[in-house]
Amino acid sequence: MSERRIDIVAEPDHLGAARWHAVTSPGLVAGVAGLRPVEPFECGSPLPGAVPPGTLELSLHVEPSWRRRGIGSRLLAAAGAHAAGRRLVAEVAAGSAGESFCVRHGFRRTGSWGHDLLTYCDVHHAWLGELVDVEHPGYRLRHWTGDLCGATSVEQMLRRPSRPGDAVVSAAEADGGLVAYALATREGPRERRARQYGPAVRAGHRGRRLGLWVNAALIKRVREIDPHVEEIETRTAHDDPAQQALRRHLGFRPLGRSLRYEITLP
Image (cartoon, rainbow, N blue to C red; front, side, top):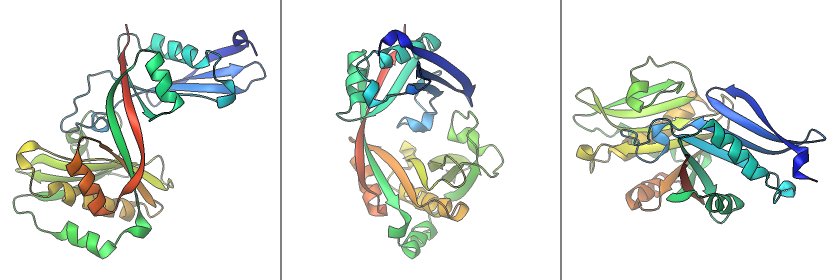
């Protein structure tokens, strides 16, 4: 089928996200692209976020039978026109078509992640409770739930009243300030898998097992809030062996690998 018979159609913004569909003449969707704001805690340096303001995450997919027709390039062009002058980041599976697409279109590789999965049926809940109950003199454990709603830092979220929502934070505080946290988000109240970010610990407070403390507390808290959650997925930079060891200690198992690519648009 000729490329001219494929239209790139902008979809209405939804919760800060912009979307485009590649629609074929019979009305089938051959590909989709989306942009959404990147929250600081999603980028590996969550205390505080090191992401330039305005950074957007790009998601792009073309159905296999419609590839090699320029559809992905046209979707990227539509997203690029919408986000001129801003930085785009994309996370793709290693060795995938998505990685080849990023390389061809001038994205540069900026990170490598290992993905891990914790299944609640494999968790020893009494042991987990013991980890949470360990005293850390001078530190206070705090929990928060709510919606992200454009928050640019975990500190900002913790200043809001706790209420029902799709984000859960377990944090350690000292002298009224945030020193460590782990955060999980869910797509909806009956979603079986949550996504975890962190734990992150401020430099002056490392070596005191605070990361293990807040991560164990988060795992326990997520299941208490929503018993439908059966799994927690997280990711770890490959140059962070301490975080990898913490994951294994808590029972996370390797799930896969992804790469992070970025481009700053003209």
